[in-house]
Image (cartoon, rainbow, N blue to C red; front, side, top):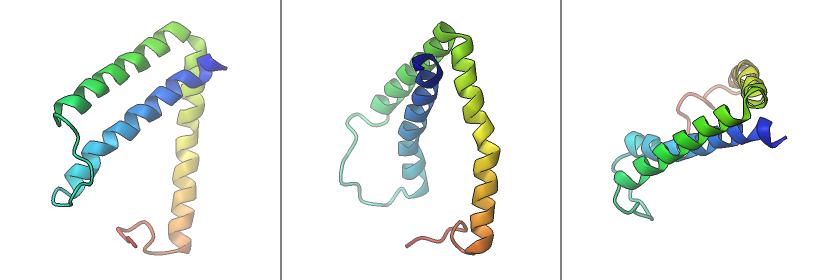
Length: 99
């Protein structure tokens, strides 16, 4: 079970950390309650480490990792379909509408 989930968990950890750059790029003027020490060096080092851990888990677990990643990739069209259906039922929800 760990072979199937470790690469997927590592990929999500990487995506969550990449959101730091995405949010700072989208809204650079917003006041931040927490300043990242040594930004951008600290996140870049973390991303490099996470990429290496993701790579090593894919290499070490072999076919089990590919099954887990395959299941994750199979969910992408399902997610897109559900999101499209939700956008049709509630216009404005996914078109830059914020609270």
